[in-house]
Length: 169
Length: 139
Image (cartoon, rainbow over all chains, first blue to last red; front, side, top):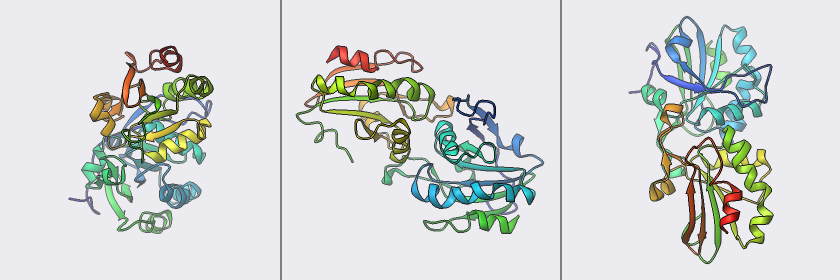
């Protein structure tokens, strides 16, 4: 049962390492983010990648959001976040490699809790990527209500990419 | 892929595992220790030095690049948990948001497929019996 427009976005606990402007190279301490608490009353753009540091995610998906994060904010997105099943340390390092600072919240769903609740989690064992991998998707959430869902039907970036989301904001 | 049976045959292998690439202890203390002493390990007859974790191979590749590993240490992924299940050397780090099947911090010396040294860190936040100095002393 996959999340769809009109649904209430599920409550889940994600982990992340906050950007510390005073100490950008430090190994920060992980924090928890509860989606209902963090997203309540806000417009959120959340995009998911199967894997940090993997080719499509790194070369096609993430860069669009990195360069477009400010445009999304200008259109009213208060939070722009990236989530994957990689852990928070990996997500933090990946975000650093793009110098995202706090433009994009790099969230970890390592336990697959959010993915499971959205119905958008896959088993990557056959590709030696472990049993929990999120699908590639983008969701727009407005005060916890889902207003857009773009799940990639095939490898590549179309409905989950920055241009598609910009058009829908 | 690396097959521990065929690729370890007739070789002296040092293998160390980290709970997570890019995590503080693993990045600041565990991997760098091995990287700095590759020469000493080779001088003691080690044919292959392997670092492994349950991260996938893309993450390990990026981590290795960041740490300057080049080809001195082979970073291999046990993302499917096969090695973890076969050895039982796993930790449930769900409470830390790192999932249920992380490899523990350990080091092993494998000579022609036989384990001659194996030590797990009693405290995964530290590096002692699984560090390069302990392994060098055991070689």
